[in-house]
Image (tube, rainbow, N blue to C red; front, side, top):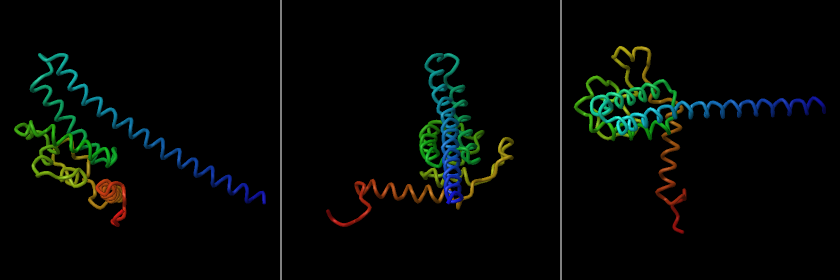
Length: 172
């Protein structure tokens, strides 16, 4: 009897530790992602506050370097697929005005070289880099468990949204 109680208590303790670990990892990832959001806003704020020194070429280079860094952290698996979908869409919108300057930006150039595509299928995160700063990275796997889970869950969410939150096709 006492050993059964101890076993249940141990199992509950292990479960609580696992939940705490998962929550702390999620919180750390969110804080890391927030740093990139801060960098994005700093670029825009600097351009508004100091237009003589932070406009044109400087702002464009800072923005495209931020985009490259976002590709790198995605390729390293440091951000979530959900965040990547949002960032990818924003990168494509923001980099579209800089198409003539993408030669020095391998990942952004690869992404922008392919017509409209979702972030989960972006060719830039599934190829090996050739640049000096990309030798330490390997391409993400197209069939990773995380990506498959994300794309399946996203499809289910889209289906639910399109059907007004209903998973059935029966008439009401």
